[in-house]
Length: 292
Image (tube, rainbow, N blue to C red; front, side, top):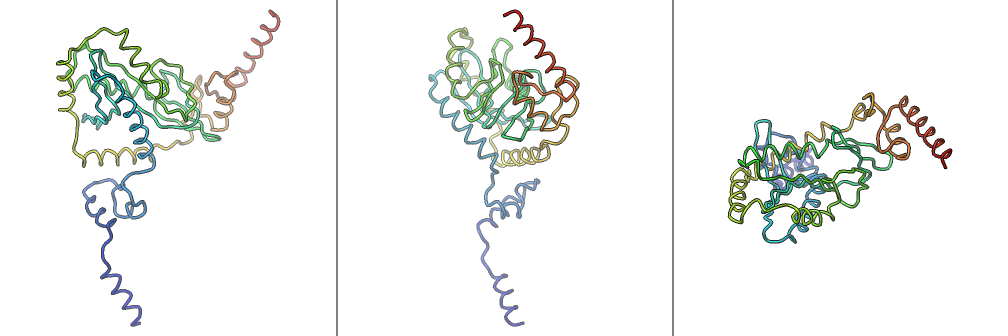
């Protein structure tokens, strides 16, 4: 009994660790991401997904720093709207217009079309879905135009980049690998007329800086809510659907379609439409053989 009491006294008088002090500071945040138990188990304020995104954004920021001085770069622009916060990874202000760039640091096969609500990511045997970044970027541009008070004459270009670890099968002019970003911007600048003078570029920069949320506490809270939302919106049964009848498709059928682009052209079909597409492909192959 005496031995147990001594142990309990030692536990009570033990000094508080640095992790415990961090958790006490972060109690003002409402989400569980900054809770005491979460920090003790994780020992850091950032998730693995956040660190991946930060690495991808940093690599792109270093690449964009090689542009001419007339191109002004603002990274991680956070805008406050009625529906919540909206973040822009990179924003370029130039005499030729504005460039809104969204950077993705994903691996595996990336498949999607411009009007699809969701795109597909296939990593070995798994098939995941994520929101269409082209549509999301257009929503960010609309919010930026409203809050910064940009004229309609000022063009705003939307770019979505992926790293080279991914196998990109999205055939759009605004979606490409991050290593091709500088070349595409400089090519567009050669064909685009000058819209803003140097003074007007600085004025647009000041307007954007005035609406940019710089409070670190709000940014941490936004990151926590974003992570919580991602955890809640994990891929479930019914997320992958046939492109024709919108019937729910399991991962095995989706993987079967994506692994056979000659038959299905990087699209996902249910079992019924898979059989129809294979018949169509066979007929076309027979006709081509007859003509040859």
